[in-house]
Figure (cartoon, rainbow, N blue to C red):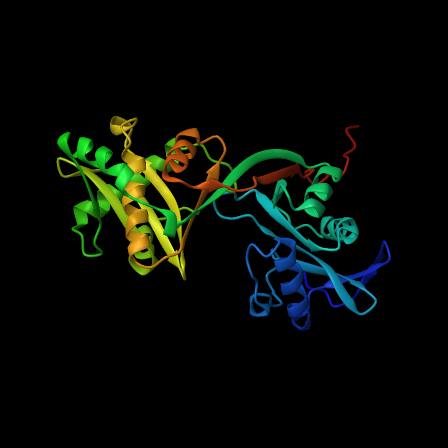
Length: 319
């Protein structure tokens, strides 16, 4: 839907589809919109022929001052489109209306994700009739300050009950990978989630491939059986923690805290400087575990939702 004509000006802005020449301006706008929380290089933004991925820009004179990206939210939420906005908040409404005029078929709702202190996006979604549907948390831990010693007593107590922590090797036997995948699936089924915290579905082979390629996995065994796990993804000086799961028969013993503490100690020993994690606010056990580990919770992330009206059907004459 990257038509080449310009849309009529909206609110003093000229709207048109994104062009490759806009990439440096759009990268700056998107980076600024997340308050530098992430840095987006211009190479990340390119024209797309995919009709389900449409980016518009708003210009004030010759300058690109805002952008809106509409795309499928993801395979885990197949009925939803995601609306991402950046730049001058006064241009968000005309950009939004332009997207509404060209929505792809087959979707029943729009979702927007923004942090609670990103004022221009928060104000827009509230004013545009979206509902504040879900809240998620992010947290970080400075690994230079992390000390495993407070968790040694927990490790010793659990060891006496038959629990042992280890890093799963990439050449682990097939039975271990099968057990890991089963526990991973159990965690997805049991943990409270929202569209933002629901990962893309993975096959057993896909999970193993991802772990071998880019992750480190720590597990707790009880009498040889894997009963808890946590996954870490190293990214430069940081590690991101995700998918910490304990089998229901072994919960409320501190296994999630212990396995994550061991993983963080490993990350510090690898020279990583910072650890990040997150999840839905409904997952109170994981929030408590991360607090014990020393994570500092950041501003909440809010997922906004608005239903899309089904396409109208022509009236028929019943006479």
